[in-house]
Amino acid sequence: MPSLEPFHILPKAPSLVGGHMNRLIVAAGALLSLTLANGALAQTAGDPDAGKKVFRKCMACHAVGEGAKNKIGPELNGVIGEKPGAVEGYSFSPAFQEWAADKAAWNEELMTAWLTNPRDVVKGTKMVFPGIKKEQEMVDIIAYLASFDEAGATRDPAEALAAAAAQ
Image 1: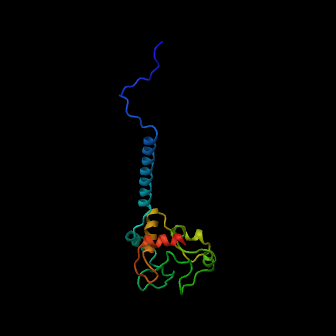
Image 2: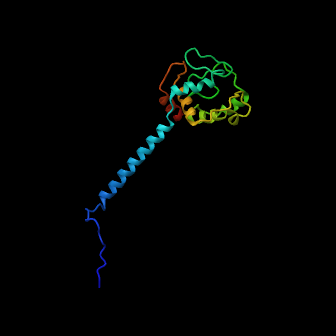
Image 3: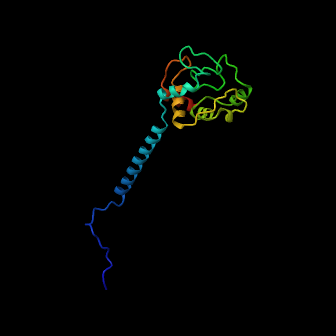
């Protein structure tokens, strides 16, 4: 009776069974995870300089930086990390005040929802802005807003966003 031994085209390699193969699989998985995570972070990282250009859409109603004052809308110094509706000297609509009552702080998630379409978030808001539709413009303008502290001085936007997320 003929032998049923497997036919090998290549010479037998040392076995990778057991610990060696497991370590190889874990290392490959870790490398893939890091690569994917770095790619995701790179896609969502905002550019404050690009955000400054996007902010031009907001300048008729809002101001940031040293000496910023309330206009038609509130000044936005230090807005990231600040409680919504807490700008001194600005009269927010009753609808906005009601919506903001249980919000701890403006963070990336809350600001994204708001800037996507303010009238969908707060029915009866005074803000007539139609919203930002492009994802990169959104992350850029949020990075720009996060780059100002309460006095209008510049700060690290990544640190401000991280602190706001922790609230």
